[in-house]
Amino acid sequence: METQAAIIGGGPVGLMLASELALAGVKTTVIERLKKTVPYSKALIMHPRTLELFAMRGILGRFLDKGTKVSSGHFSMLDTRLDFSRLDSKQNYSLMLPQAETERLLEEYASSLGADIIRGAEAVALTQTDDGVETVFRDESGIRTLRSLYAAGTDGAGSLVRKQAGIAFLGTDADLIGTLCDAVLKNPPESAFFSVCRLQGSVVIVPLSNGLFRVLIVSPHAPQKRKEEPVTENELKEDLREICGTDFGLSDPVWMSRFGNAERQAEQYRSGRVFVAGDAAHIHFPAGGQGLNTGLQDAFNLGWKLAAQIKGKAAPHLLDSYHQERHSTGKEVLHNIKTQIKLMDFTESGMALRDTMTALLDFQESNRLLAGKVSALDLHYEPDPELPPHRLNGKRLPDIELTLHDGRPARLYDFLHKGAFVLLSLRGSIPAGIGTDSVEFVRAELSETRADWDDVHSVLIRPDGHAAWAAGGSGREAEETVLAGMERWGFI
Ligand SMILES: Cc1cc2nc3c(=O)[nH]c(=O)nc-3n(C[C@H](O)[C@H](O)[C@H](O)COP(=O)(O)OP(=O)(O)OC[C@H]3O[C@@H](n4cnc5c(N)ncnc54)[C@H](O)[C@@H]3O)c2cc1C
Image (cartoon, rainbow, N blue to C red; front, side, top):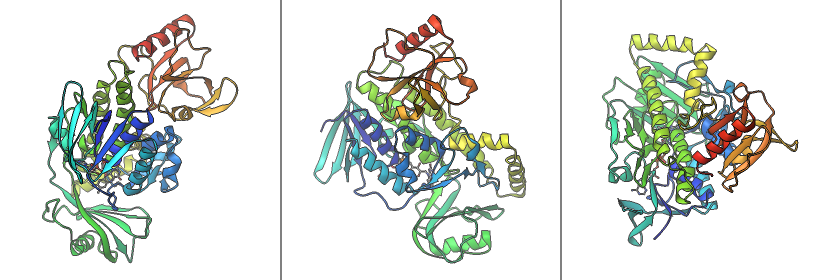
């Protein structure tokens, strides 16, 4: 079998990547071990930056229809919640949506764009040649080989692709194991987001849409079990009684599992023609709900770059920027997870630290700092060192309101639906000498006040909504910066 891009692992991250590649017209094949998606959901929350990405592709409505908006998040279950509503985004909220539903919607989307998803197919080996990648997989018809120009491992924490590509997965094993279940609670807590963190341990309880409740427990003083050891209903009830004084009438669990604080990151996100993304690239304790979100954002960063490479339109520096941008982002996420775990220190002094942090979160600026991290809205990439500096370079751009040159109102993300670059020109015309069908040219002015944009002549906006570069000023000098920027990004 032949394809242009092979994706090993059709979980949420693989499906997002497949969608982005297929949107760009790349022949994409996904190999997924499972015949059907699992009905249980690890992740329940999608954060603002992920929702922005969906808005950029015009698919946000599909997710909003199935989920529930929440205007806040949490940091290590501290009593003061993170206020997302003050963040600079049209998507300044999270969405409660079970991962199984997210995967269903993404699979539908990827298939509608033409990605070929082969289920019940397990990759068993992967090798690189000078001009491609060979993935050997096993399915009902036996052993087969998929040849591709490039391959991505989105095959989760135990990633075969990462191992076969020789990429080290550096970090530490778990020494704290929590339990979770989806079950009936006859006497549920009154609060919709119940969370306690006490000397005895921590408990989070969240209502699910099917009348069940998700219960997450960390019981640090009990002997730590292995992650694979089956969970029993009795164990859950005993832990709840020990920490909360009641088992909330827990019964009829439909899913019980364990999760841990193992923390690892792939040393390289690229090895030649092979990439890793999502849990194949980073794993950590599920604090603040960031794993799936970070993985989907990896896929969104890699998709358009790989598509440009496959279509022969990528600037020379583009493909390596995936590792540079997403490895450092992953490192930042692990950093905030470490802090959250440190705050789960079930001692008297640990509780004092939590009280102090809770009080600090009452201050708007501290709350904003951590809300920016957990929502991923404070994510900006390094400015391109080869281009004249501008404060917008590398910045994540919100869905800014515009007035087009013919007077019609529009929003920035409207122009990103096709996954192409946008050259937004605020001062006059596009300089002569630029003629490319890979960029959408938009002449407009801002309909809102933004100090960072005061002097902007033009901005090249990447398909993932970051400013590749901005040119300030006006006249010949600004036009020359635009031409240099277009050349550097491979459009001239
Ligand atoms: C308790 C818990 C709660 C969580 N809550 C949140 C949350 O609220 N928000 C959040 O952002 N994150 C959360 N996470 C993390 C999130 O669930 C993961 O980060 C996410 O599932 C990663 O997606 P992925 O596609 O990278 O990997 P996976 O979901 O692991 O998918 C990998 C896919 O690859 C397939 N596969 C594996 N090996 C092969 C092979 N050899 N051949 C073919 N296919 C293969 C698998 O079958 C699977 O479908 C939580 C995690 C846990 C444990």
